[in-house]
Image (cartoon, rainbow, N blue to C red; front, side, top):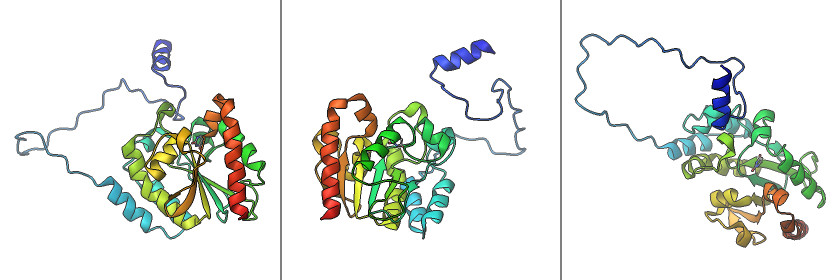
Length: 248
Ligand code: URA
């Protein structure tokens, strides 16, 4: 048992997801073949599932945040759902003028069910508090609303895959419509990829653009700022720009 555990740790498993262990060495009983079933003559063609179309229909049918969250919970086509503890929907004030869109939950967010609650999240809160914005403040001029491109934690915090982002984008689009913020902040490369179809945050940051019908400011991700303190100067300039835009 100890060797099996050590092997799993060596493979990169860093936590147990379920409360009770599953003995994967147990071979399930093979179901008996149905009588008179005609023999297959070759590989059965897999029907193509229009994962983006299904997501779009489900998202567009959502009339408020609760039905949107329920629609995302019921959406079965994103494999990330299977490895995550729970869906991480959003945090903050739905009446906020500023909506922050990050990449995906990490380990802390997966456990808490809220976006940006780990180290990067604490830095994010600190950064925005310096321009008078916070996720706790219900006054819309000082409020923040926070979500992510992906609502489930990717295993080992790996990068989101293009198909995962594509199938979750209709939900994000509806999310933005329902919140209807004045401004969006796209946090980091993956948010820029999903929202603007562009990468290269060093070039993009600080340059206002439009995404999902809203003025959008790409910024360095706080996780990057934790590793790269010389980039904090640029992040501060972007925060001041955001504040000026809100005033103007
Ligand atoms: N990084 C993100 O992009 N989102 C989170 O919720 C946490 C870390």
